[in-house]
Amino acid sequence: MIIAIHGRTFKEQIQEHIQTLFDELQQRHVQIVVSADLAEFLKQTPIRYQAEVYKDHRDLPPADYLFSLGGDGTLLESVTHVGSKGIPIVGINAGRLGFLATNAPADVKNLIQQIFNGYYRLESRTLVSVADDQDVFEGLNFGLNEFTVVKRDTSSMIVVHTYIDGEYLNSYWADGLIVATPTGSTGYSLSCGGPVVLPESNNFIIAPVSPHNLNVRPLIVSDDSVISFSVEGRGKNFLVSLDSRSKVIDSTVQIAVKKADFKVNLLRLHEDNFLYTLRQKLNWGLDMRN
Image 1 (cartoon, helix red, strand yellow):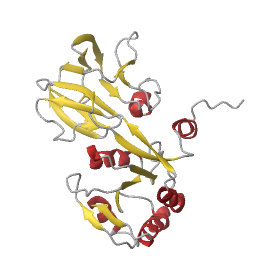
Image 2 (cartoon, helix red, strand yellow):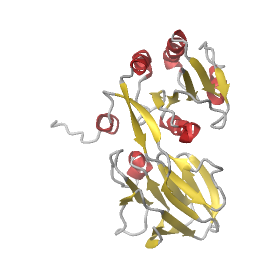
Image 3 (tube, helix red, strand yellow):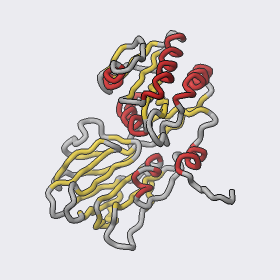
Image 4 (cartoon, helix red, strand yellow):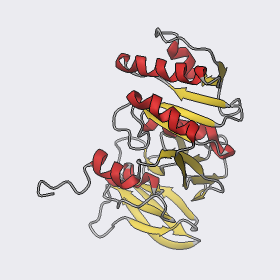
């Protein structure tokens, strides 16, 4: 068995749990490969392990699982490492909120035991992909949470002319526009007034960022749709992003967004589910009467 591990940094308080993770895997004679970012950070810690190192998504071997050590941002990076390979991602929350990376570091021993016993399920999550005429994202043109186009600085708002399957939808006068997946409905889209959508829903959310009119609200559309844009504003450049990866473009770049032709698999233990995480991490439905 091959297990890949990716991470960047984590707090000193959880070092003993990360050591337990490596010890448990090595006792089970697992072949471990760690990302170059994680390997560099581990040099600064007392953690001892034996592993090979991979540089990036092109260098990742055909692992059975990829463990993501960090917060949700690290898990989103892990998605770019896995890509279309279908490797299940196991999120261990060494960060803050941990909405996607739900497993606690202190529970790694039980987590590994349940994985080896097959006591888990895989959740297939839809990805959003970007098609453009300049390969802006250099081959990594997919994201788990959202695609966003926003103004680059504090200048005046931009106008995002938006089309669904070639049909004109609206011209959004705003700071920007988000196209979120169901997974991303609890991220940036949520902070802009978008709805929470269950992960298995076959939808995208189109949510404006700080729109300049009161009658514009987030819209749910089928994820079979192709959503295209043209952007204009006083500034010459705009910022586009896929999850946490951002690029600067100008108005000559033609962009369309659609569902990716592959999905990512998130590994969940049986007691771990979306509705429980929604209540625990975002306090959804919190009411002192309950």
